Amino acid sequence: MFRSLTGYFSNDLAIDLGTANTLIYMRSKGIVLDEPSVVAIHNDVPTNKKSILAVGLEAKRMLGRTPGSIQAIRPMKDGVIADFTVTEQMLKQFIKKVNPNRFFAASPRIVICVPCGSTQVERKAIRDSALAAGARRVELIEEPMAAAIGAGLPVEEPTGSMVVDIGGGTTEVGVISLGGVVYSNSVRVGGDKFDEAIINYIRRNYGMLIGETTAEEIKKTIGSAFPGAEVREMEVKGRNLAEGIPRAFTVSSNEILEALTEPLNQIVSAVKIALEQTPPELGADIAEKGMVLTGGGALLKDIDRLLAEETGLPVFVAEEPLTCVVRGSGKALEKMDKIGTIFTNVP
Image 1 (cartoon, rainbow, N blue to C red):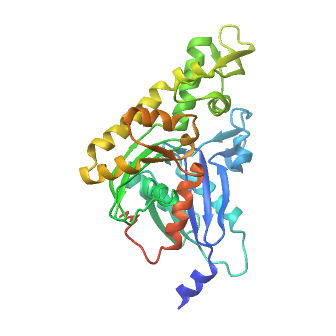
Image 2 (cartoon, rainbow, N blue to C red):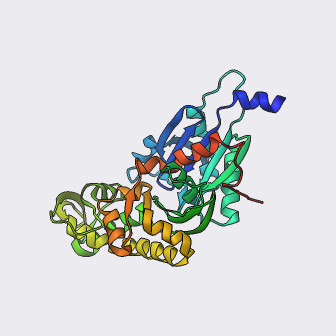
């Protein structure tokens, strides 16, 4: 009786705890938060006490621009927790933001996405951080499953659906049928690796040093995964390594394509391995229906064209790929009491 009462008063949440962004879906309200997974910590030198200064968007603006006493960090790396304490604090702040204290507010039930390649220890860390942040009950769902539900694929039917979720830290490839994951693979390549490849290319070819924020801007503006007829250019500002002085220079879309070749090849290779490992009947379904791309990486220009060219299959980018995973988790949350098979167990 009491449990049903607390369930009535609590705002259940679905959380996509990503390397780059954290999104929160609230039952019956939809997506209520979309902020970068960044925390700014103030270190009081005399007392050596650390306190949270800002989280999310406010903290991201501080990345690479902080004085010695402030540290802007990303507590998630490759889709899993790199700093347990900071992740717990970040989750607390985000939950507080979307669920401000009300009269008789109960602890929410939370569904959190985890990479399919994460270990039981990493999954336990994610679950424990959500419980410590104030959750009443925590269920974990694998990212390919959540992405497939969010993209509107028929996951419950006896037909094969293939989803490629390119996130900030990992790329998840999953083949789903009858409400279960038939094959899944996770490679630690994503938006962050794209940014890293751009930084390294510019350092190697121009002798210039740029930051992560600038690399991300280049990727979004002129980045592409396939040679196009039109060559686009962009002026970039960075520090000349030989002179130590800030300089402006111009890069073209063809150069960025060259810079991204290696991480893109790793994604193509993961997709090909998934197709090799897929049972023939499900492979036939995928050959007919194609694969769906989700996640922020799906927004990279012509990445669907690259995968279509490499595999010979139809490739589609899901509607609103950035929010696919959290919307899928939200749908799973709405049906939490009816379906239990799509959640993953942690001892």
